[in-house]
Length: 312
Figure 1 (tube, rainbow, N blue to C red):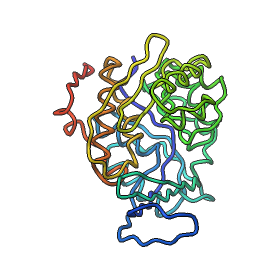
Figure 2: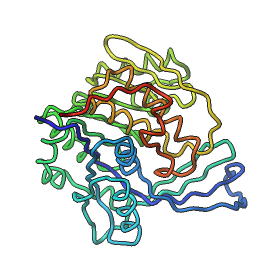
Figure 3: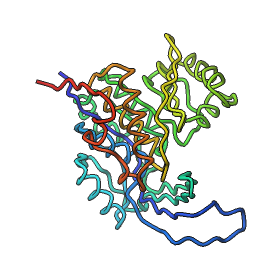
C-alpha cells in the first residue's frame, strides 16, 4: 500500500536577496540597505513547504560540492526533508538566484542554474524504488526537461499523482502533458504554454482549455492576490484569496505548490486542497525570504478547516 508521502524532484539554490525601493532601470545604479542569503530554489522551497505542513517529504536534486550545498542541506534537513537522495556534482557550482524585492513586495529574479541542470534521466531512474512508496510527485522546470519526463513516467508507472509547476516556462511536449495530473502555471506561464494572451479570468480559462486538449487533467492557475483558478473538463472555478499586505512574494508559488501536494497526499477533496494552497501562499507573502516564509500546519489551521485523514 502506498504511503502518504511526497517526492520533490527539482532544484535547490542559494537565494541572494536585495531589498530596493524600486527596480533599477537599464544602466542605472541604485542603493540598497538590505541584503540577505536564504536557502531557496523552487524544488527545495516546495519540499520545505510540504514538510512544514506535516508531510513526510523526500527530495531528489543535484548540488555542487561547495559551501552553498552545505547550507542548503542543513536548512532542508532542519525542516525535516529527507535529503539522502541528494546528488553531488564535482564540476558545477550549486545553483544561485539573484533576487530584487521592491517596496511593494514584488520581485525580479535571475537564476544561475549550475548543478541543477546537470541531473540526468539515468540519475532519476536510479531512484526508481522511491517512486513506489510515495503517492505524490512534484517537479518544476529548473532541471532538464528530459529528467522531468523521467520523473513523470516513474510516477505514472507507480500510480502516483504528478504535479508539474511549469516554471520557468518553456515549450512542453505533448508526451509530458499527458502524464500531468495537475499543471500549476501563473498567468505569464499559462500565456507562453498556450500561445495566447492571458489578461483576465475569461482569457485564462480559454488558455487553460487549450492545454487540457494537449492531455493535462487539471490546470490550476495561480493569480497572485486574486487567488487561483481551477480548470478541468468538468468545470472552471475561481478560488479567491484574502487580501494582505505583501512583504515578499518570492516563494508564494512554491508555497502554493507545496500545499497542493500536501493536500493531494492527504486525500483531501480538491476544493479544500485549493483553498488550503491559497491560504498557505497568502501567508507566505506576509513574511520575508523564501523557505523562512513558509508556514507550519499550526500557522494555517486557525485560518482554514483541514480535516486530515491520517494513516492507521
